[in-house]
Image (tube, rainbow, N blue to C red):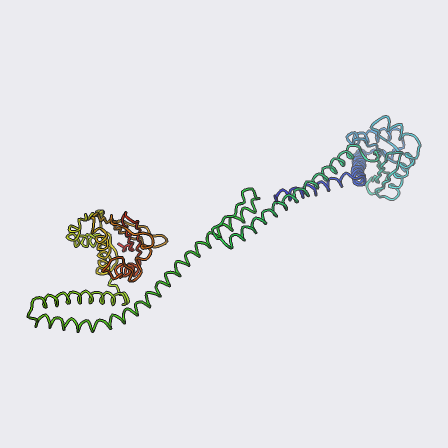
Length: 496
């Protein structure tokens, strides 16, 4: 649109210039310049002929004592120069006889009009005489009825002396018809172009105003919903560029806000864990010492008891004490900062080792263990014992989920390209066919002390989550009620 407006503006400007070229004053000015050029050519032609005459020891025409022969020679010179000058008459002036000589008229009409002693003829004589007397170019414009007569005369030199003058005449209509018609056409074109420019400008403004209103409306919508999209299918290209940029900005802001919310949620989760860890550590320390005293007393009671039932009761109490002590240790491990002893570990070998350790339990629960492990190593920098703890936790949970009806637990190991991260990772996926979980339960599995087991502590997956993150990895759980659970762990791969 902008380019068209510029083109129309340039066209209007050129039309104005062209129109000015065809005004009456400009036409007369151009004709005067052309007539002056013709007169100058006449003067030069005579001066060249005079030089030739001097070299041949002859008198130049204007110095000849025979006016008749001089007139014939000058007429020939005039014809040579003026025959290509359309509508121009001309000749020479001799101050010796104060008369016009060697005149050439392109038409008989001009001959009759210029050959008499009318005021036009007198005007030509006066102009030629003035040019000879003043030694300067002299011109005059006459009105003849509805026409205009242009007269021009220049001094003719023979060496340094002025010996006469050359003159030329051209008749013009008041305004040449062809030029007048062209001026009308250009004026009409100028008006049309100006009108088109105005209409086009109004159309552009209207389109831009409509696009701006859409942008304003779209921005108001974006304030409430960054996911909204401004549609400008039929708008100008400039508006579409702006709208595309606004839509991209909205999508970017939405993504950043969602990312910030995730980070904020993670920070709140970390703060809760830190506070809970401090509380758990205090409680565990307070419980551990009395628990040790109780265990010692029960052991003494079992040793000194004479009845078998008392010893059996003491044994049951000791087993429960050991279970409580195990819970206390897990609480302490949860509360302590994680310090990893990293080493290069083949994750494939570690997975095989942990799966073999559960073969008897799996056989007892009628669970089939399956592995899909490529025939190559998967080196990672991990704490072997802590990562074994993570795998054990996940395998145990899967076996518990299939304890009633049996099923299949499969593990898959593969390379994984991590988004916006380097180096690439190793993905370990555990897939069971157990009872699964609904979305509400699956959303809290990593929360401390959240459990669906009657005898569970709710710390297993929470600790596993912290351990995987401490290794720079990620753990995700996807579960569906009645169809099983998929646990995916991604660990950065060690440089080979």
